[in-house]
Length: 121
Image (cartoon, rainbow, N blue to C red; front, top):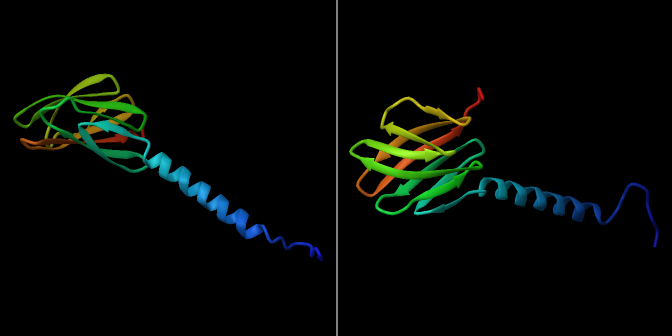
């Protein structure tokens, strides 16, 4: 067997393994959330959380917990990063713990909020 400098049969395999490891890490970061009575849709710096009404609903997103405390009409109380917020549809984002929180929608079945990292924090 002849060894040629600069060529290694394992180089493509190493690249493939490195690519797969990088993809797995990226998926893990994006999927780094959990929920109960809620669903999440997350990107790198923001998540949309859809809470089911009538149950104890919470989700862990972006390293913080978000909970639905209550909803009446178009006003909702949520707890994000340990602080309670009262939100109304169409209201400007409320800042809490380095995050901006907005209420996207309220129906009889669900409450949808958006939590994003605040770039100025």
